[in-house]
Length: 159
Image 1 (cartoon, rainbow, N blue to C red):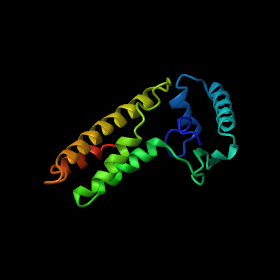
Image 2 (cartoon, rainbow, N blue to C red):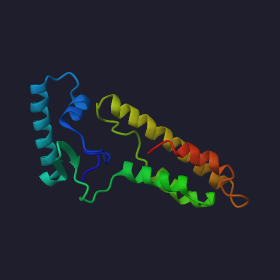
Image 3 (spheres, rainbow, N blue to C red):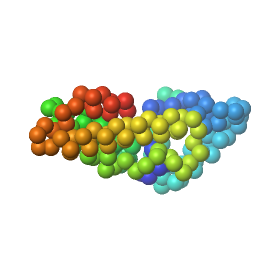
Image 4 (cartoon, one colour):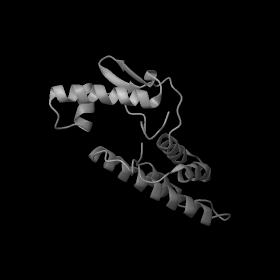
């Protein structure tokens, strides 16, 4: 599944939640038409309508489908680094996060305020991971990642 089309694993959303995020000024009828068209185009672009499921009044990315997404990999790596004990064990997670970060989230798309907020959050987390990884590497071999609690707390801001 192309990550750019569904960049992270959002929770199941109602029609109204999707409409408020994507078409905040649309009437109910316009929302219905826009959502129907967008879902048809998304399913077509993904090559299989089974990627998007509808259950209990909510739309979701099918959680049973395997996918690889840089945002998911990035946040998973940060979580692993944050939870690593001892602190020296955080370096692989930090390196993975720094390596997989591909630049600004949805940089080439006009996706609205929600995307800018996520873009800023991910950018701050990347800068923190880069800083902590650099500190960790510089502190070798005498004391790997001496200020580990600060670095883990800085990388903890992304979920």
